[in-house]
Image 1 (spheres, rainbow, N blue to C red):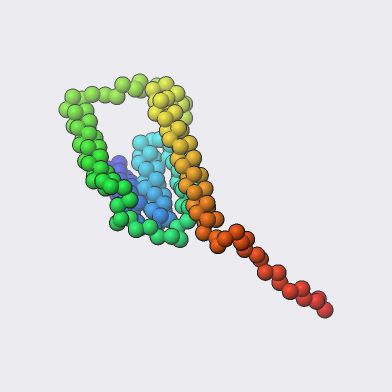
Image 2: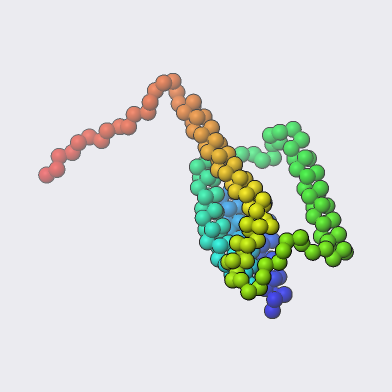
Length: 193
């Protein structure tokens, strides 16, 4: 049964991830991300991490994806960008090289870890603690730096979204002809009989 749940959760994650990468519409990409996050929640439940599964659904599939959709709508999806045009010289080839290096590095880590039988240096939480206490123990001891770096990355992403939104708004204001301010036509007053 565990194998079937793992395969189902993995397929949900893979199909959602492929949808995120291949969708041309950013809103469809964000909705595919929801599928991926639900698949991860299924994998958390299979590992008896019910609290993490609930947080995955409530926080990530709910709040974070809604924030992504808000930023997508704020930046404007009505304009279509041609992604086939290379905006920076060599960006596509650099991304391919970085992807191959990352895949090779991850493969080497998995193979070396399975060959040497190496275990994680993180201290295993004690089994007599509740699930949430074990997570807190790991987050604030062994994984403290990863937790803090993730929070800094989220702040940088929000600041970047604000800067991009402000830049687009300034472009819209510059497109207005002259110094004219668009006037709103007043509706003629009608008598109420």
